[in-house]
Length: 178
Image 1 (cartoon, rainbow, N blue to C red):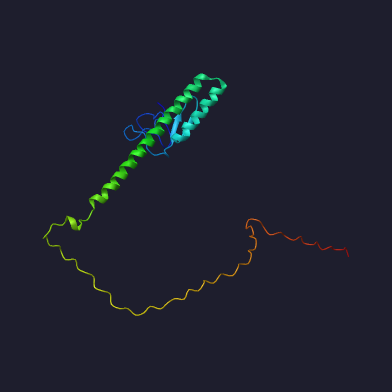
Image 2 (image 1 turned 180 degrees about the horizontal axis):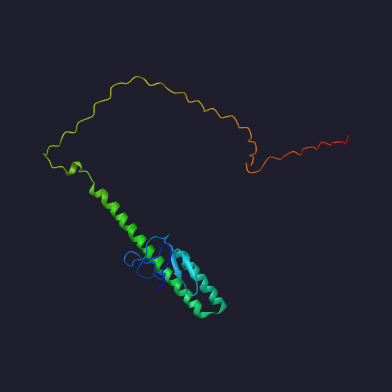
Protein backbone atom coordinates (compact mmCIF):
# COMPACT_ATOMS: atom_id res chain seq x y z
CA UNK A 1 0.00 0.00 0.00
CA UNK A 2 1.36 3.38 -0.98
CA UNK A 3 1.90 5.89 1.79
CA UNK A 4 -0.18 9.05 1.39
CA UNK A 5 1.20 12.51 1.81
CA UNK A 6 -0.66 15.59 2.84
CA UNK A 7 -2.05 17.46 5.76
CA UNK A 8 -5.40 15.92 6.51
CA UNK A 9 -4.90 12.21 6.09
CA UNK A 10 -6.17 10.01 8.86
CA UNK A 11 -4.59 6.82 9.97
CA UNK A 12 -6.67 3.69 9.81
CA UNK A 13 -7.56 3.76 6.15
CA UNK A 14 -8.90 6.28 3.76
CA UNK A 15 -11.86 8.41 4.64
CA UNK A 16 -13.45 7.83 1.23
CA UNK A 17 -15.08 11.25 1.13
CA UNK A 18 -16.86 10.61 4.40
CA UNK A 19 -17.54 13.73 6.43
CA UNK A 20 -19.26 12.19 9.41
CA UNK A 21 -17.59 13.00 12.69
CA UNK A 22 -18.76 12.88 16.30
CA UNK A 23 -19.59 9.17 16.40
CA UNK A 24 -21.21 9.04 12.98
CA UNK A 25 -23.30 12.18 13.38
CA UNK A 26 -23.66 14.76 10.63
CA UNK A 27 -21.92 18.05 11.49
CA UNK A 28 -24.47 20.66 12.55
CA UNK A 29 -22.51 23.69 11.39
CA UNK A 30 -24.00 25.23 8.24
CA UNK A 31 -20.55 26.42 7.21
CA UNK A 32 -19.07 22.92 7.28
CA UNK A 33 -17.27 22.16 4.01
CA UNK A 34 -17.91 18.78 2.44
CA UNK A 35 -15.70 16.93 -0.04
CA UNK A 36 -18.12 15.19 -2.36
CA UNK A 37 -17.08 12.47 -4.77
CA UNK A 38 -19.83 12.70 -7.35
CA UNK A 39 -20.50 10.21 -10.11
CA UNK A 40 -17.86 11.65 -12.43
CA UNK A 41 -16.32 14.64 -10.66
CA UNK A 42 -15.22 15.86 -7.27
CA UNK A 43 -17.05 18.84 -5.77
CA UNK A 44 -16.25 20.77 -2.61
CA UNK A 45 -18.51 23.15 -0.71
CA UNK A 46 -21.17 23.54 1.96
CA UNK A 47 -24.25 21.32 1.92
CA UNK A 48 -26.30 24.14 0.37
CA UNK A 49 -23.72 24.73 -2.36
CA UNK A 50 -23.42 21.03 -3.15
CA UNK A 51 -27.21 20.62 -3.25
CA UNK A 52 -27.52 23.45 -5.77
CA UNK A 53 -24.54 22.21 -7.81
CA UNK A 54 -25.89 18.65 -8.13
CA UNK A 55 -29.35 19.97 -9.03
CA UNK A 56 -27.83 22.05 -11.81
CA UNK A 57 -25.71 19.13 -13.03
CA UNK A 58 -28.83 16.93 -13.01
CA UNK A 59 -30.74 19.49 -15.08
CA UNK A 60 -27.83 19.74 -17.52
CA UNK A 61 -27.68 15.95 -17.87
CA UNK A 62 -31.45 15.90 -18.40
CA UNK A 63 -31.23 18.45 -21.20
CA UNK A 64 -28.51 16.42 -22.94
CA UNK A 65 -30.57 13.22 -22.64
CA UNK A 66 -28.19 11.32 -20.33
CA UNK A 67 -30.75 9.66 -18.03
CA UNK A 68 -28.20 7.67 -16.01
CA UNK A 69 -26.10 10.71 -15.06
CA UNK A 70 -29.27 12.71 -14.46
CA UNK A 71 -30.47 10.16 -11.89
CA UNK A 72 -27.03 9.96 -10.25
CA UNK A 73 -26.79 13.75 -9.88
CA UNK A 74 -30.33 14.00 -8.51
CA UNK A 75 -29.55 11.28 -5.96
CA UNK A 76 -26.52 13.24 -4.81
CA UNK A 77 -28.64 16.40 -4.62
CA UNK A 78 -31.20 14.53 -2.51
CA UNK A 79 -28.45 13.39 -0.13
CA UNK A 80 -27.33 16.96 0.53
CA UNK A 81 -30.96 18.09 0.76
CA UNK A 82 -31.43 15.58 3.59
CA UNK A 83 -28.28 16.89 5.30
CA UNK A 84 -29.67 20.44 5.06
CA UNK A 85 -32.96 19.29 6.61
CA UNK A 86 -31.11 17.53 9.44
CA UNK A 87 -29.10 20.69 10.13
CA UNK A 88 -32.25 22.83 10.11
CA UNK A 89 -34.09 20.51 12.48
CA UNK A 90 -31.13 20.37 14.85
CA UNK A 91 -30.84 24.18 14.83
CA UNK A 92 -34.55 24.57 15.58
CA UNK A 93 -34.37 22.01 18.37
CA UNK A 94 -31.37 23.69 20.00
CA UNK A 95 -33.10 27.07 19.70
CA UNK A 96 -36.20 25.69 21.42
CA UNK A 97 -34.01 24.24 24.19
CA UNK A 98 -32.31 27.62 24.67
CA UNK A 99 -35.66 29.37 24.85
CA UNK A 100 -36.94 26.86 27.40
CA UNK A 101 -33.79 27.33 29.47
CA UNK A 102 -34.24 31.11 29.39
CA UNK A 103 -37.83 30.84 30.52
CA UNK A 104 -36.87 28.57 33.42
CA UNK A 105 -34.01 30.75 34.66
CA UNK A 106 -36.12 33.68 35.91
CA UNK A 107 -38.46 31.27 37.71
CA UNK A 108 -35.54 29.81 39.64
CA UNK A 109 -34.13 33.22 40.56
CA UNK A 110 -37.38 34.75 41.82
CA UNK A 111 -37.26 36.71 45.04
CA UNK A 112 -39.94 36.06 47.64
CA UNK A 113 -42.75 38.58 47.62
CA UNK A 114 -44.63 40.02 50.59
CA UNK A 115 -47.54 37.63 50.10
CA UNK A 116 -45.26 34.61 50.42
CA UNK A 117 -44.01 35.68 53.88
CA UNK A 118 -45.83 34.08 56.80
CA UNK A 119 -47.76 36.32 59.14
CA UNK A 120 -45.90 36.92 62.37
CA UNK A 121 -42.47 35.95 61.01
CA UNK A 122 -39.91 38.65 61.57
CA UNK A 123 -38.15 40.12 58.61
CA UNK A 124 -34.43 40.74 58.86
CA UNK A 125 -33.63 44.42 59.08
CA UNK A 126 -32.09 45.80 55.93
CA UNK A 127 -29.59 48.53 56.73
CA UNK A 128 -30.48 51.74 54.98
CA UNK A 129 -27.80 53.70 53.18
CA UNK A 130 -27.05 57.02 54.88
CA UNK A 131 -28.35 60.14 53.20
CA UNK A 132 -25.65 61.86 51.16
CA UNK A 133 -24.24 65.01 52.70
CA UNK A 134 -24.75 68.25 50.88
CA UNK A 135 -22.12 68.93 48.31
CA UNK A 136 -20.74 72.16 47.01
CA UNK A 137 -22.56 73.60 44.02
CA UNK A 138 -21.20 72.27 40.77
CA UNK A 139 -20.08 74.72 38.08
CA UNK A 140 -22.11 74.76 34.91
CA UNK A 141 -20.37 74.20 31.62
CA UNK A 142 -21.43 76.46 28.80
CA UNK A 143 -22.23 74.51 25.71
CA UNK A 144 -20.29 76.08 22.90
CA UNK A 145 -20.07 74.46 19.51
CA UNK A 146 -16.78 72.74 18.87
CA UNK A 147 -14.49 74.67 16.55
CA UNK A 148 -14.39 73.27 13.05
CA UNK A 149 -10.93 72.33 11.83
CA UNK A 150 -9.42 74.33 8.99
CA UNK A 151 -9.51 72.59 5.61
CA UNK A 152 -6.35 70.79 4.61
CA UNK A 153 -4.20 71.76 1.70
CA UNK A 154 -4.17 69.17 -1.11
CA UNK A 155 -1.42 66.61 -0.85
CA UNK A 156 1.43 66.52 -3.29
CA UNK A 157 1.51 63.40 -5.45
CA UNK A 158 3.66 60.62 -4.12
CA UNK A 159 6.93 59.85 -5.70
CA UNK A 160 7.56 56.25 -6.48
CA UNK A 161 10.75 55.33 -4.67
CA UNK A 162 11.45 52.56 -7.17
CA UNK A 163 11.78 54.82 -10.14
CA UNK A 164 14.71 57.09 -10.52
CA UNK A 165 14.15 60.78 -11.07
CA UNK A 166 14.54 61.79 -14.69
CA UNK A 167 18.11 62.60 -15.55
CA UNK A 168 18.68 65.71 -17.54
CA UNK A 169 20.76 65.22 -20.62
CA UNK A 170 24.07 66.84 -20.31
CA UNK A 171 24.88 69.06 -23.17
CA UNK A 172 28.03 67.95 -24.78
CA UNK A 173 30.64 70.57 -25.03
CA UNK A 174 31.46 71.06 -28.54
CA UNK A 175 35.11 71.27 -28.84
CA UNK A 176 36.47 72.86 -31.88
CA UNK A 177 39.77 71.68 -33.08
CA UNK A 178 42.27 74.32 -32.50
